[in-house]
Image 1: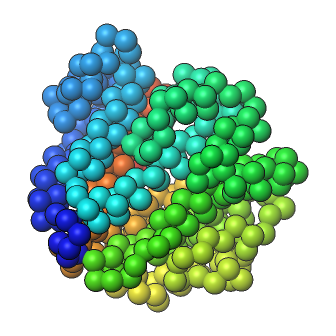
Image 2: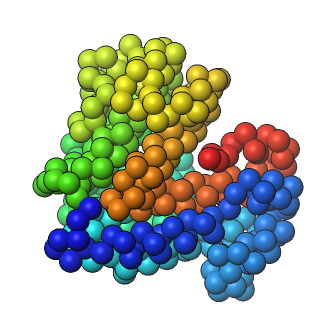
Image 3: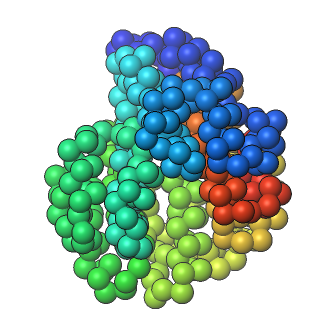
Length: 348
């Protein structure tokens, strides 16, 4: 990335690399999977999560404390990055962080679909996008799916959700609504993105993320049993798949992996692709896809150290850390064996 337009990649990347070095590694995870929720919270109190655990400790305990602390820390980390960034760099990062608006919308509609309580849904929200507290409050108070769709009418997700709502009513599964959210997010990411030197690697990463999202969506639809055609839920912007081939690939994970291996991603994803081939369930396959995307972002960051990709790579790595700690806490609360929990983690 060039420094034209007031961008300051060297400064931001240096600070992000320092944050990356503080992320949990294998040793910390091996300790955590053998702890109970209270012990995990105390362990977090002696780490980068100290401020959040201390601030929330008087109101929450156990897994609730862990989850609220994780989400607050995640939002703080990413808001710090925006505070450091200037100019064009700020715009590229801000665009990408709208993924948490998409995450929160999907979390809320899943909560309504499953009948989760307001508190359960709120604990999973990550306030790192552009939605404000007033909008969150309205969404959390909504009791019906149609009400959520109406509340979001003035956002980037509004038109897509309104169009998908009728199909949701017909099929009774969340795929149309969730896909509408994903499509809106990726459309705004790519809209007006000039493919110059400063955005070349950023766009290459976004294309990979869209390719992997299409693979994930096709597999989910194929395994859902719903009468849905994966072609109808194809997200434009990737380079690996044609919409017409997704339906057949979704029913043959081996062919899907071969397609990825023979693509431009293959040389950079040797380890991750081996994990994909060995995955014996949809959850395992999706976890391996997450690891593959993170590995690809890391590689781009090493090859192009002054592009935006090292920053995006950190955002993904921080997400994975939060997901891993949450999975450990929930697994231990449910009484799962440490070895079983370790299999759920995404670690590079």
